[in-house]
Length: 404
Ligand SMILES: [Zn+2]
Image: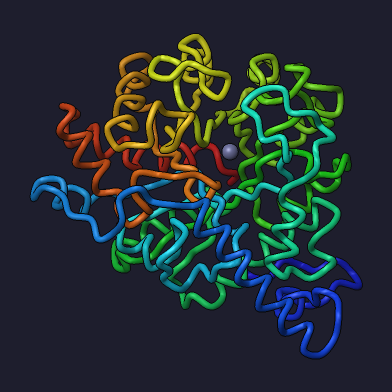
């Protein structure tokens, strides 16, 4: 992505991405920066883990199939962590070298901006202290990127733009149907190119201002989750106190998303909010990362009725890789949730929505997606169905849901 037009008075991208000062001067700053780096990396290392470590091997049939298909994943929170996307790491779950090793063609990079300390699956109070605030401080983000919440999303977008710029064509931003078509053509001659689509997780990053949606669009953001782990000004979260539907402001936001051609991501939405969005929008909807109640009951996961309603709305359902979306974070449970969804609403409605780097433990990191291909084949999906689930469905979805 080229550098987004800075607001007047804003520093240029390069300067803005510099680490912020943590407070004192001289040696103390060095100690603080070192400690902050260590703390942030330690948290990243502890929270974002692959239960089976690379390198990954699979059957001959799975390896051959995986090498020739377009692989896509609908949800990774990698931009939140103090990790250079272009360097291969031994911690965390996604970076460009590992995307290439996993033969990933398209990755959605999603940006959470606030997370309640209460961290419950149900009943998080909206005023619970924010866990992302200390993380961005530990990450050393510049002070102007720490508050308000919109600034955090803007900073993560800038980090993505910076990675794109430095990648020499290895990481390609996709914001329109035309850019997606061009990327697919490019990938025929450059099979290591990876497309990135930006998304936000939680409409609280608008800070209550509808005009911030235009700004997110200008930054290249294309998927938008109205709520995350708590109720906000747009409506109710599946993990909040009210379980409410859309507020008046939430309705305005959905109408504006439709107008801009942005995609609503119904992950984390309360059941009432899902119903409200489906009644309001005529555009395709996304669930970027979810489990299904058919294999794991609970408020985090979609019921069969919700899966049917979303599929009937030209929706795409990304199956997540972690507990408690799954009964266990194993490749077999990912496939069981995919099987349940495919049997219920059709193979063409299912995709991968790992939630890599979302403070979760996953069965593999992104370089190990061949293990999902292998397990899908073992479960009896045909090579054509595996190709759809592993990425073709996602690519087709964005080909019709992105703006022109
Ligand atoms: Zn999430």
